Amino acid sequence: MPSLSAPGDPSAATAVSCCNDATANPGMTMTDTTPRHILLATDLSCRCDRALDRAVQLAGEWGAELTAATVIEPEPADLLDPRPSSWRRQATPAERMHWRLARDVASVADDIGVVVETGDPATKLVEIAEHEHCDLIVTGIARDETLGRMILGNTVSRLVRRAAVPVLVVRDRPAGPYRRIVIATDFSEAALQATLVASAFFPAAALTLFHGYDVPYTGYLTDRDFTSESRAKADEARAMLRAESRIDAALLERLDVVVERGTPEMLISDHVEDHHGDLTVVGSQGHGILFDAFIGSMDKRLLDTLEGDLLIVPGAAGAG
Image (cartoon, rainbow, N blue to C red; front, side, top):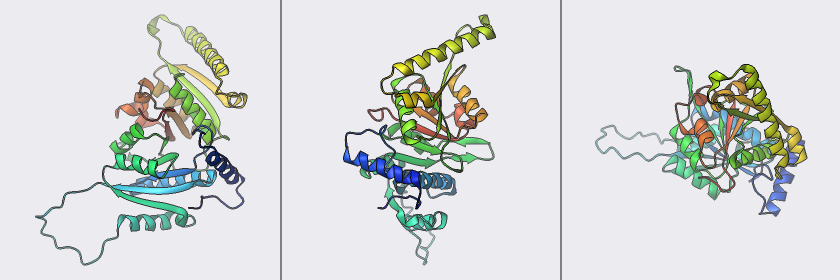
């Protein structure tokens, strides 16, 4: 399948060259290159339109292949249903997918592969990503306009937990490449992997490494104490980054380190909004406190308030 790239687009040409190098060197990891094959997970509803637009934009930017997949959950036949079968043949899911692609992204629709499966959506999507050798899964998220809150569906949550490749959850309508990226960190190996992946995927974006921390007995501390401690923790973080062999000088120069006191998922949501971040990145390996703050509990404030899109990066060993 030809990769999606705009004629004369230098960034797309660079991405194709990088991908070809990775193909020649199977030992390279996902932190060494941009994705070569993107899987768009869609339920064919309008809530996935933004994910489709973003997947097409990224495929063009990286010169990557794009496959759109939908999974149909089997329903038991109702033998007591008295309604006669329609004389008019219903479109198959694959036909509907081709029709939607032709309508929404006509210029590149013919370059997008289509996969339709039946079964458990999360399980099947993981299997499709593995079978198609995809490096990134892109999916959409719905907003309940009545309640004014984001809804992270069960399928997306389970997909994030099972996938061995990064999962991009798209909330916003794409207005161009990602430019301002915030990476949540607790200075763990998972956070380091998220940092390396974000820097490799988006080499032109501004990167902010954000760390939030809680302090016990805060009633005994003054604002000056908090400011001094935050500065000390930021200096400590920069020293850790300089000592990390996998972070080279160029990446170190790109990283802006921000340390603030408070609940991480609440602080980062405010930081993303205040600084107009368009992508937040978090590591998922181990499914620990930081991961649970973002994904593990459906009632977390972050899922309701986070601006922009969310990229969840598994650790080097894959899903936990």
